[in-house]
Amino acid sequence: MPRRPGLSARLKLTLSYAGFLAVAGALLLAVVWMYLLRYVPDNSQGLLGVSPNRYLLVRTFAPAAAVAMVFLLVFGLLGGWLLAGRMLAPLTQITAAARRAGSGSLSHRIRMTGRQDEFRELSDAFDSMLEQLDSHVAEQQRFAANASHELRTPLAISKTLLDVARKDPTRDRVELVERLHAVNARAIDLTEALLLLSRGDRGNVTRESVDLSLVAEEAAETLLPLAEQRRITLDVTGGPAWTGGSTELLLRMMTNLVQNAVVHNLPAGGTVTVHTEAHGDTSVLRVENTGPPLPPELMPTLTEPFRRGTERVRTDEHAGVGLGLAIVHSIVRAHDGTLDLTPRPTGGLLVTVRLPGTPQAA
Image (tube, rainbow, N blue to C red; front, side, top):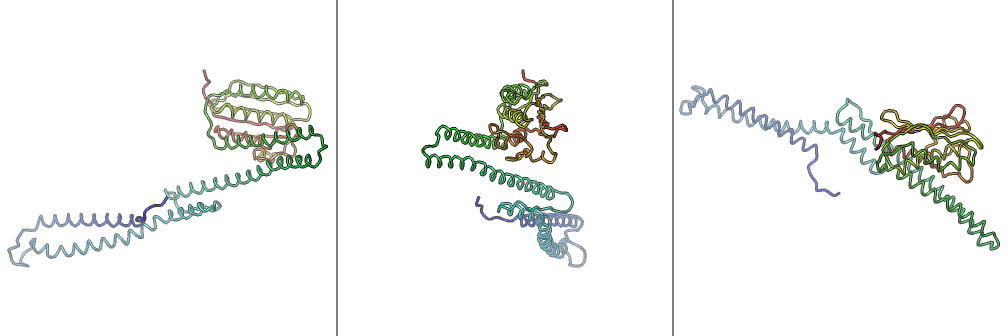
């Protein structure tokens, strides 16, 4: 926003220092003047030099007082200018760093040295903000690149199928329609997942009382046919665990966790256990599944968008889009909770979600 030019902060501080020093000097001289006049007789008609009088005092003190005032003013301006420059030097560093950040550079840091004060506190907060912005921008750029790649794949497949149908009129149209339907469904699922992930990252969720045990039962009921198809035992245990948040997002989080546990279980057989409980002011959700062993170093990458574990088992009908746990992580953060992924010693994964608890609804 354009602004009219004004005085700099350094000049304002300089004038303030000089003005304060001048006023203090004037008050001091006034006090001295009144004190001297109180004890010097008014003998202006007498002979000069015979005895002290107010006339002599005025003639001798007034010029000296004027010189002192001029000296105080000049000293205040020079001293104030130097002191203001020294005090505002940290602010100049912060301003320069802010301008560099405004031009697109987020990799630099101020790292101001010295004892803790308001400027150092502002500098540390600015460095922390730059670090978070740099990490967020890098994550968004990586996410955008991966999303572009993932969306380009189904579109390229659709184009290839249409080109084949145009060049080969004798090709089975039913098979073509089925393949196009599957490719488009995958593209739609990916787009909806991206929108849901963006919604969770914004954090603007509607808060209402939600019982995680009821959400777990609903998700388990929805995915029970998939579990039965894979001959996987799906159990929901525990008691009520109330939290505040969006029922829709929490149901999507629960569905993703249970589906992830079913799909990445053993090829046939195995168990999935969903457990909910309340610990004081915290509601806890645990989703545990059997499966192949997972290396611990794989855990931090599972919640990144489009990152899939190479050891994990997938099928064509539930291949997913690589956003299941990323969406879960985003929803948990939007609800001020924590997400922990722990590999089971005997194989499989244990997912623990902790959310702020709320009193049980009526």
